Length: 101
Image 1 (cartoon, rainbow, N blue to C red):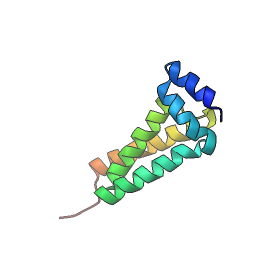
Image 2 (image 1 turned 180 degrees about the vertical axis):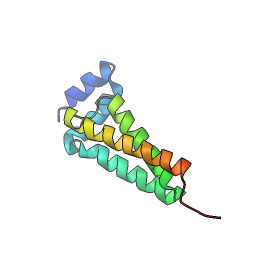
Image 3 (image 1 turned 60 degrees about the vertical axis):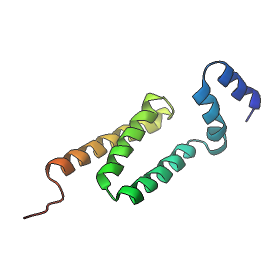
Image 4 (image 1 turned 90 degrees about the vertical axis):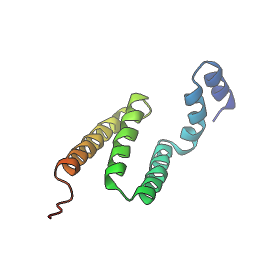
């Protein structure tokens, strides 16, 4: 981890990449997993809603894909997870929890 690389990134206009470079060089791509699980756990404990967690998972994964943060082999898995989350959200919206009246 070279501090000059971080300074060059920040001065060159890549502010977000410069800040994140420190953490990704220390933890690798596990950094994003740590951020994801901490925020997901907090969201679930606060809302107790699986629908919110699925929506957050989908948005988080698509955001990582759009920023080109993840390496190429992982992108396929993130797309599959986002598609499964969207399917679960649609199932939950149209069918629900199976409550009968």
